Image (cartoon, rainbow, N blue to C red; front, side, top):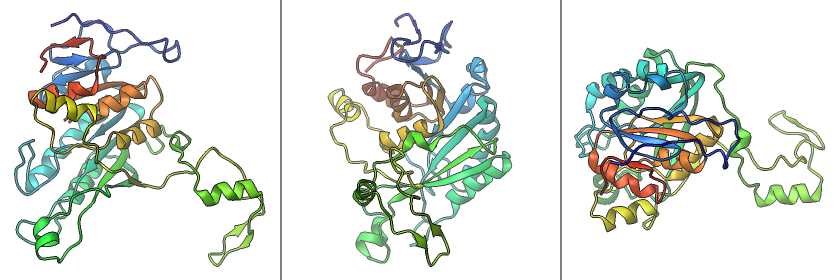
Length: 329
């Protein structure tokens, strides 16, 4: 194991940034970069045992995708049924103590179906709602991640009996103990549509009162703000077959994590809810998409993962950036 030496990459960002990782690291660091560290262990234990005590009250964003509330066990580990709801709620106090006063929690949650029936389960909704209400959190906004490339599922009802359409979205709930947590949609502006670009070029607009009773002024939509404000429906395909992570796993005979999200989804929320130099925490790191996104956007990151196999594979997201490694492929 190499000696862990972490310093702030001040030549890449503002000189005011100071690495939060200076000093003696906890014993459960699996690997580290100048911007972050991956911890090996169960998140509830690590968040409770004092390993991250120096970061309490300093995390700006907890962005995570816990094991989904399925009605059967998966190999990546998940609680099932009502026990899932109780299990997820216990993380509320652990998450809240890590946050800054204006920090945010974003949880991605997939859908589930009742066993053997073409009927959706309400388990995911109830889990999110109980997590929010029992932990006195505000629901700042609900988002949908739509994956247009997702394979048709559930297969029995979509492909075989043809009585349902494919389930291609997951929910993301943005929550906070603060009514107005840190956020700025100017950091996530999207490219203007061709019609909006033409409107700006033309310099005129069909003003006046609309059937909705909105009164549109002559110059209401003529200011170029650098891009369009995105909606809360985010569309990202998860189809990369030759990304560095998958290539690394295949070259080293490592198991791919079965429930990965596209890195652009993590980047959206990191941009939206944090600034360079802020701290992002993912308590269910998996293949460490969150850490890789934060690293690229110059945010400090901490990820926690219980599976040594998944940790080994996640190293492939940090080619040439790992400064300390407890166990490698």
